[in-house]
Image: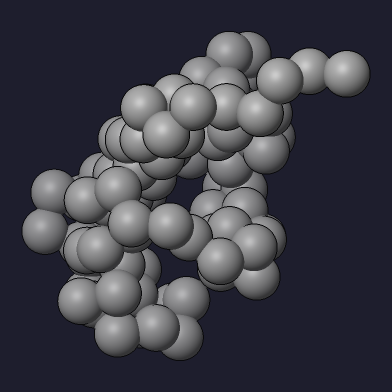
Length: 92
């Protein structure tokens, strides 16, 4: 059985996830599209900003983000593989 992650490892994982969330937001909604994405997700912009700053993201918010954006779950969580399920935002 694997050892639990140390606090510093969790912070790194959350920070990496936050960067990838922002990358998807910029790719689909533009640099200033945070309010549009937050509205589409049904959350306050401040909450989305918190997610992009490394706050813990509830599972239901991650699932909704994946559903709404078409981001590949594996890429979102690991940074490896294709970014979008359909190959890219231009094909949606």
